[in-house]
Image 1: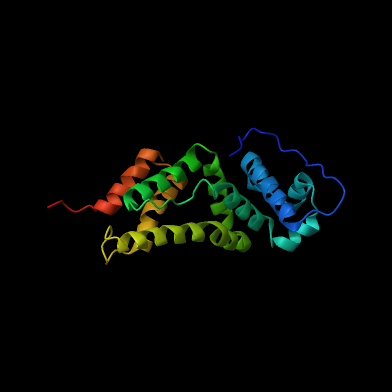
Image 2: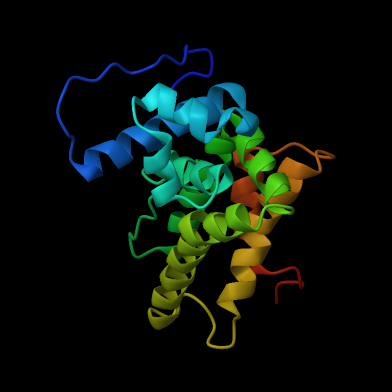
Amino acid sequence: MERQDEPVQRVRRGRGRRPAAEVRAGVLEAAGRLLFTEGIKAVTFERVALTAGSSKMTLYKWWPSAGALAAEAYFARSEQVLEFSDTGDIRADLTRQLRAFVRLLTQDGAGPVIAELIGAAQTDPDLKSAFSREYSMPRRILAIEAMERARGRGQLRDDVDVSMLVDQLWGACYHRLLVPDAPLSESFAGALVANALDGASPRS
């Protein structure tokens, strides 16, 4: 992930039509750089087109709003970091995944960005839809599928609501990000997994 203090520069392009996939990747990279260096207000079609060496018409064709573009750019920059490993040990996999998520938020500069995206999504329907489609729902499905596989291995009870487990684990991290009454840390992530899997009732 790029440092937040890196300058955002306009990309100079040569002559000739570029493949659509290359143009789209360049636009997402430019939007991501603006998002992480200057915040969501900097992600306008005009700024992104200028930075990517593309045209505003191209951006209007692919994204319904600058907010939707910002959401997809965030996902593109975080997708590899948040890959969900499957070692066969759900406790280890959840702990690794949640700690990677916390590092992304607290050390890699994504915390203020995702907070801005969540805030802006409350009044921007296109951003809200894109955030769910491109980021939060795919990640939710990965977690649910991992837990369902763990259930099949006998690592979770048959009656456990795995969707609610996702809310408990990731929701607690989002809560500490958005309501900073207590620190968001990797140790907290590990404790969340232990608390969710072991429960709060006394051990027999």
